[in-house]
Length: 164
Image (tube, rainbow, N blue to C red; front, side, top):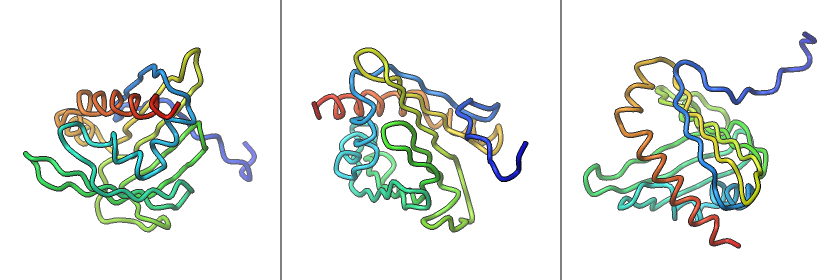
């Protein structure tokens, strides 16, 4: 391989990854807008009855990805991260391993890799939650990845479909 050309980032799940796939009745651009416009993200990002009260999304590589969610049973949960890849209407990748400007953080939990593929009547929404090891993936599963991210996907679809 020519070392001046890097391979395209893969969107295949690995052994320590969790996968969520949904077909949504909303365009890839509307889903993208929901993920990258803070006021839209606040409408779907926390599984109800939780709320996302703050969001800063800079959809460029190195940009900030910050959210604060509030849950009655868990209190406030803040998440500071960094956008790694931003392809409008197609793919968004962000991580909590880095902060804005690709600054390393002391701890990391996962990287979210979101792929939007146009299909008849909307798009396929594919999320891979990438983890460093099996223990972190299992912890995310036990925290309710399937139910939580599944519920958020339904909320996302409703917001995105309302955009017309």
